[in-house]
Image (cartoon, rainbow, N blue to C red; front, side, top):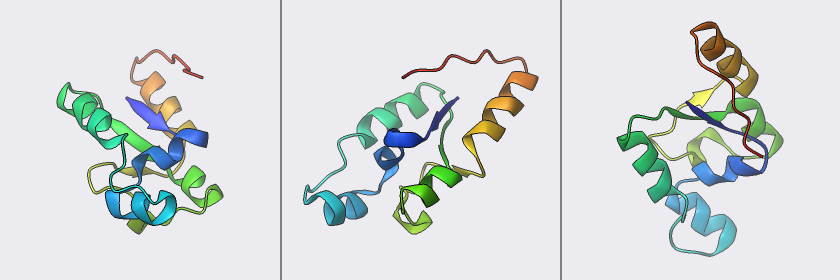
Length: 88
């Protein structure tokens, strides 16, 4: 499970939202996110980080679910036996 938050939050912008914000045609992060998902990784984005970064849910690419909070996902996964490995 990967929960994007902080500066990584913008990685989940749809191509349209990316172009609107950065004047680049495609979000370069989406191919990697799709490869991770194809390999079986669950990729989510923190809803609180979206709010903090002023990103609307409608700007999130359609295949990345929005979690209420990154911390909630992390705690739930640890309860399920997952190990927490923070990546700076």
